[in-house]
Length: 397
Image 1 (cartoon, rainbow, N blue to C red):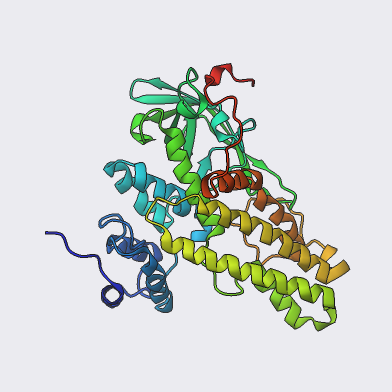
Image 2 (spheres, rainbow, N blue to C red; image 1 turned 45 degrees about the vertical axis):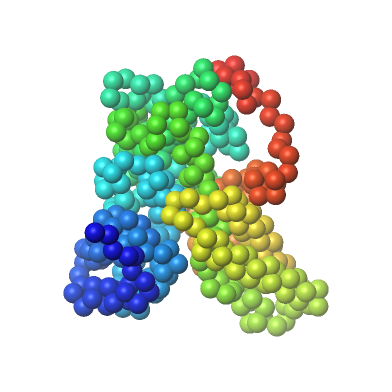
């Protein structure tokens, strides 16, 4: 007999009971996180047995706050944003029961980091043009190709991978989606040094990589549908993050404005106020978007949130440099590093300004997102696409 999903009061009791039996100060962090997952208190809107309790999604922040107040260890989501924000909801929506039970628990605990093998040198904004080939060989697939702009590939244990499995049909219909073992023979990760001096992105070369068919997500040829779900989740994860008022970049600039009155001018005052209001509107819109989400099925509205995030980050970081004048031109360190996370708020103004340039490229370019908003949100006529019905093998390369 089925039971009703727990409400806020029932969840609070569950957390209290769990903490009474699992003292975070006395347990190893990983042991505690595994127990929390098994108790259904990881992501409460997921199904029972998969880290959740089939509870309403909006109750998750209350559960997280209760654990944080008790000094519980974090699963460090900043290190595994692709896994938590993109791979997990895709596996939940399209994975087999065996795949869900194999991948979701170590993903949530942070034991296994994930990356995303989507973009290619000739297929970035037009993902469906990708050419990385997967050829079936019995119960395995042999994969050859190159991926680029892969965040966290140097740290990742697993990757979500989309490939070309049928070149004889139009590009959107010949794609298949896999989970790829980043430690498999034939996977080579090379750093891409960025304008910041660091190499948080990578290029990945796949040479005769063997991927078992049991690691396929969705049906053969269903890769575009699965990829679209992943991309929608990515845009929500980037643009619809839960932040407090004056969180993120606007908090940095607002703090600078209050602490350094000698930098103020009437014109800059107007700009600070304008960006503060826009950032607050974006924050509240992101909250509403998260409340409307159902597990694993975001809509195109996430594209608008991600577009606003990129634009605001770039304008706010530019304003910070304008406020600081020549002081803002100093750059702290050009040392080549391969960081495990991107942290805007604890870095220098120069880093923030340079790194923000990537916000309008990663997670879908701003130009493509404007097309999605125009066509799928506003209902405007679609762009003319002459290659929709042409087999992929006949497209200009």
